[in-house]
Length: 71
Image 1 (cartoon, rainbow, N blue to C red):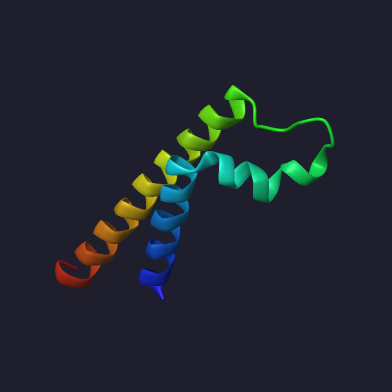
Image 2 (cartoon, rainbow, N blue to C red; image 1 turned 135 degrees about the vertical axis):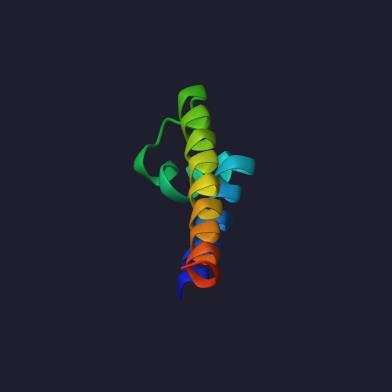
């Protein structure tokens, strides 16, 4: 179960980091009629969220490994 969480964190982080426009289309585009593309602020924020998610996933993976082999 822990590995599923790690995979989800890293994969969603990678999508947010590499394809923030896709995240905007799926989560925000339907909320407005005027906007055709995301703002720069949204893109920067989404990339930062992706980086944090990837780092959290890597940290969780390391924690799982340390817990299984050292404690």
